[in-house]
Image (cartoon, rainbow, N blue to C red; front, side, top):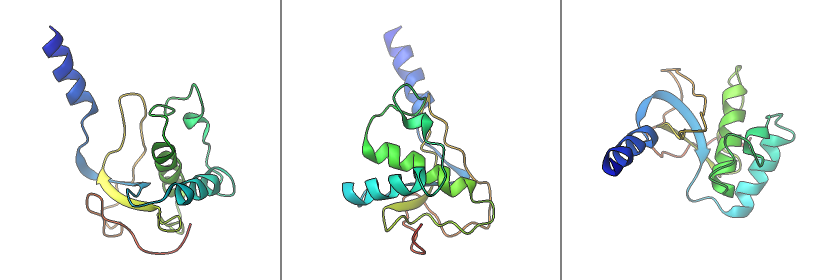
Amino acid sequence: MVLLVRVVSMVATSKVAGDGLWCVASPRATEAALQDGLNYACGQGGVDCSAIQAGGNCFIPDTLRDHAGYAFNSYFQKDVAGTARCDFGGSGMLTRTDPSTATCKYPSTRDAAAPNADDHTEKQGDKA
C-alpha cells in the first residue's frame, strides 16, 4: 500500500513538457537578483503575490527561488499585450516544463508562436 501511495504521489507531482510556456527563476540567478525580480513583480509589476504568502497555495516550497518563479510567471502570464519579458535582469527564463505542484497551479500560455523556449532555455531580452 505504501508503494502504491508513493507511485501515485510521484505521478501527481512529476514535471512534464507540454505545449504551454512558463516563466521561472533561472538556476543561475543570484539570490539578490531573484529578490529584485520578486520585488518588481509583486510591486511595480502589479502581480497578486498572495499565493506565495504564508498560508497561500504556493507558499510551499518556502524558498526564494520558488517564490520568485511564481511571481515571474504571474507577471509574464498577465502580459496579454506581449510587452513583458521573462528576463528580470537575467534571473528569469522560459520553459515548456510545467513548474506546477500538487497544490500550486502555474498558469501557462498555449501560444505556439511564443519565443524560443525549450526546457530550461534562458530567454535573453528586455529587463522586466
